[in-house]
Image (cartoon, rainbow, N blue to C red; front, side):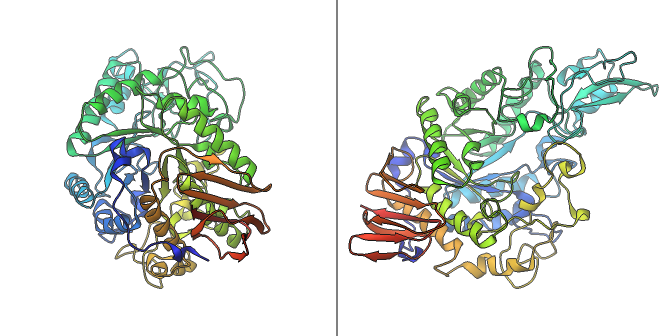
Length: 545
């Protein structure tokens, strides 16, 4: 019994769910702009390409799309180094293309969330160029973190902070006369200087930027590094190396400082002043579910990414622990929990779950998708996971563009592997991505994973996602709400929701259970005998009761 049991017609979204906040039950699809669809043949995805593919997203059954940065940028870090927050980079089109995309999405019943990058700008931003030209005590430098160095001649960085991408988090400037000058802080690449959020001009500028895009019609913002804008007073040393490994494990003097919450409360007031339920979504790494919940208190942001679930190991016990912790933390502040398996910064879960076995990884990824879509709250789907795309692990060094790849001791530099452009159709690269090539090479094997190849195949991962999202809209017990764990054998998860039961066999062998109801969706074929069902290894099943 496989996923073709689900209805093929997508019903309208349940109005009662939307009335209490559309985001509480939403399925939000992440579009990595440069890798989604290319309209002009330059090998790089763009806004027109996305607009042309909006019917695909509407048919998939998602409620909203989140766009990664498309602003004017030198592209030192894939657009997360913004030179002008009110302009579209020519790589991706024009401002009119953004306006057209938002209008067309709304016509199709889709909402649009855009990235905002408030922790840092590009070093080509007019503000930073003015800061470099300014005197060390000038006002332009107060928008960033400039400090004199340590040591007899100021030759050492102001503190021991390390860049997330590797190396020191400080770069020394050169004064107009050619002598070494002050140092500036960049928690990521040197081309991404950190803003000083104690500065009133910075706060006012970003309020203006948010209003600019809200006035254009966007439905909300995904806030990049939402945990990073405020630094501890005095910028104290940490006292150890390999600091990137501490992110999400403990509060750091540059991440998850309590002062960020004042900023998010101000942004919430701004969002609430606009009609149509505009939302803020925090990309926040916090050491515990309880600290993450602080970002989604009633007067702060609407959602925060649940990285504990994303980084959870495969297995019934660790997954249940993370689910329980996540639900308890968000329930304490009345917010919905979010669930996410992959994004543009991590190895795709179809590869993570397989530990070198692609078939096993895909099987587990399909089961995890049904588990995620059945849990209470909102779901994020990263482009291509609905196709079962694996990580591309054999990209040649000469095509790599992740800045962390070129630095020694920060992130692992493997983010390019999850950013390879999508396969849409055809038997040869670029598989319908656009009329030209693609900025990263696509594997030949992706011909069998394209949207065209999988559409209509009831056993494909794409049709599994389509069926699951159709059922998620149809069954009143899914989306936001309550759940109750059910008794199950070791290695199996089972929980109920109103009129619904989900069972996940996370074992590498089959499990036999009493039949809990009528099967409506399963990632693998089931076998029934009397009142029991044999669920294959690494399989998830949805039941109507």
